[in-house]
Image (cartoon, rainbow, N blue to C red; front, side, top):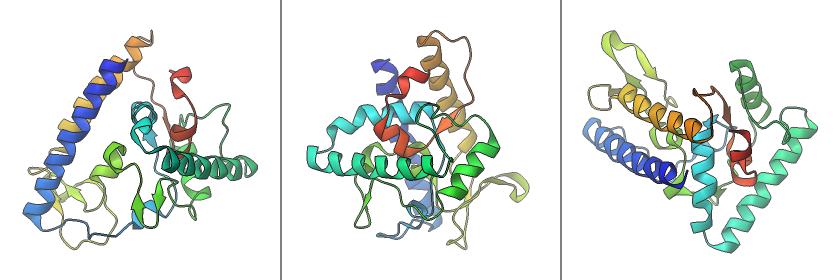
Length: 203
């Protein structure tokens, strides 16, 4: 499993580099200090992202790690009281469950956000790395809808998002095969759960 996590880390760095070049070329780079997408509730992230994030968390200084995990646990407490999430079943298996957690967490900021700065920036999930400007494909079709702050888009020719998704799926499949499953499970979770729970148990 460690080898798969290491390969995923390399994939994330590659994806970030390609996306960064595309945003620079098209003049749509996020403004320094903007954290709008980190303050309006939780994105769903893949189980591979969650396991990678938890594995990499040990690289964060102990005091910072302690604060981030404490915030994440507080948020999960609130969501459990709202019956919007369960530590006993932390996987999001359907689009309605993903939409529900997004709505119920709408006023929450990512637990890794501290004074406007991401405390886990180097190990952040894939969606955090490629969110911002809209990515469009042929006939102006939306391939990934952005935050709306940008008047310009990224053409898929500059950031071939489906190629990246395909590569990501291969690594997800390898993770599930390693765990003894024959196929990818279409399940996600949220960052607070990734930071506080050992989600390998749910593979």
